[in-house]
Length: 336
Image (cartoon, rainbow, N blue to C red; front, side, top):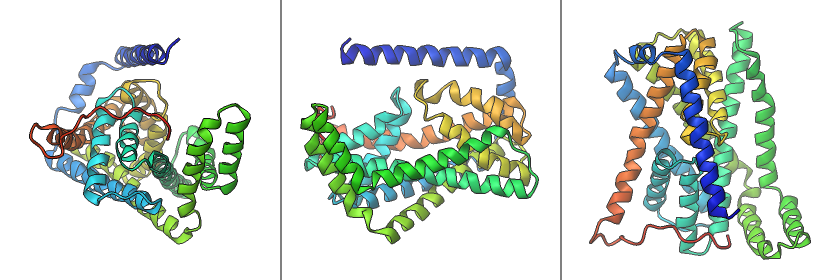
């Protein structure tokens, strides 16, 4: 089967899974119940949710730019921010969460032949973000335990996931891993990958010994992830859903669990999966299932609305007569 045929088949499977999960959810949770939970919005709180997410996105672009510069990628802050926001737009409007990252790597990496460096920086950025989110959830889980706030047993999965993410970060920055990957490429007849893999590890080696800098980036990421958690809580208040302190603490654990489930590439942009998991998981925080679904739907729509900023940036770049206009098809992947 060709690569294009395989991609079409995977897309069809995702569509089938998405439709199936939405149908299953609606068979258990009538649409009118979800509509009722959305019927009385507080636009002030929803605007606050949008503003909080916007700040987190601007800081996220800054974090990516700091990592890029640390590995030696030369690009202006404005250009990096523009690519980051276009990536957000692609993540929400292409049928795969990898779309935005792939665009950023291909677009920025092609300019100076440094795709390996952009790939390494983007992967490091993603792993740091997930590790920071998981750490926040684990800290909240510890606080919940001390305060006798109940949580589902599945929350304990955060501990091995967190350990795995930190191990992945350590491996990514490991000098030995690079040598192992290059040797493996030669042994398996993939010698053509040895050069890109060598460049990949050399680029990441630039930050390996900068412990203080890495700690600063991780602290920044903790702040970004805290803001994104707050986006969900303010979306709940925007729908008039009352949250006690205990419920907010529970959601600080449960929402990261939901986010981790959405990294599974089994549906179109998490549609169906997000709502199904919300209806069963977030009810531990005392929410009715329609409220849980409505809260996550509102938070998702806030993110989609903000990602339109990237769509505007993309449109402005493509306008005829724009000095920056160029063919928007990403360059062929080729070698990293």
